[in-house]
Image (cartoon, rainbow, N blue to C red; front, top):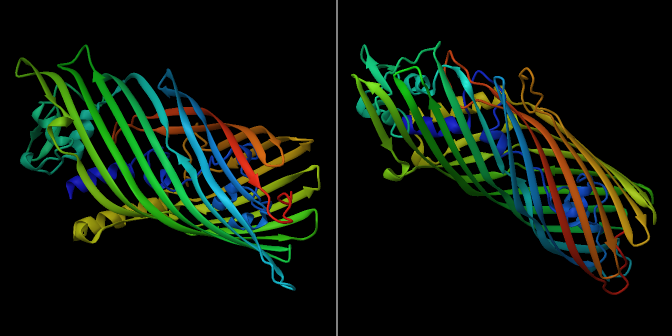
Length: 502
């Protein structure tokens, strides 16, 4: 039970600070697709417009708008600048990486039966990037309290031989904490609520979600477009944390606590959508995404080294994570439903404007254990965890708007996305809002197209490195992420099919 508690503490940090960027219920439930350059530049506001491969993951009815066979490939680069503030100390970090957007094809097939109101049935097969977990930030500064207090508090009531191998056991055997009055643990080295230690931590995260999507869409009388996508999601998340504490005035001298975590798994979901063409200018769209049911494998390991004066001797102990096997837990996660409504205004041969509104509620996320992991204690913990998710999160509204202007072969695009906070209780100085500002340009020829898109994301966040009942360490930060994408596509016209109808 203790090991499962430790693993799931990473999944949902039970803190007095509400906004935690590392909460898996939110991290694994959110999607911010960066599929291709065109949809990126338009703020992904294509729900009522269709005719783009990205719609397989937004409103699958958009596949039915295709009137040609098409293949495309998208790739790009991501640049992140993060600034954290711990007390009065600011720290800046930069990160860059190449990124995959999408690869896929759409097959457009006319229905040749005379007098049929069904005009075509199209099929799409795509691999799309739905989420990118990349993050790298650092904070440092001197504050009261110590993480050793958290080790001691988490170990309360546990016999020394039964201490958590990934935390308490190492701290105890490194002389960083000791027992008083049975199994009540206290820090050694003069550490208390009023003593200062210098703290440093680097958090580095990589990975994301790629979705293999099979989409089918039908065109009914060039008025109603219906579509469905079966998505198989492949998720990988790697997180490394290096935490250090030092003191020049206490018997406690230094500590380094390193953690490694890898989560990987697969999930499946269904997306349904429709687009209705009211007239040549106006379209409306609706879409619903079922929850993604994930089967995840969660592997965690840690190591600790410490230097402390104990019984008048300077003690140094190092417990490397390579000396023990990682703790592995298999569990399930169900993400929330997603509901989307869209409006599109098409100006023939001039361009279009799209508006999407999306709603999801992250309090609907839930964890569960596999059958062989289920015990009375474990089930109680999972139920408590899901209750905390319900009480911490709320519904989120996403609004997207995008516009495209046609200038001969060129297409000029602008977009904007806004997302409200997923937290029920806001933290002073942290709004948890997200803004995505985007732009791009494209060139369209008869059988080939080339698109470039760029999105700039602004988001603030809050982080707490550990739990302790009396000394809360609070880090605030703001990230500015730039993401550039290039898409190359080939269009193959068949029979009397024309360009996609916008």
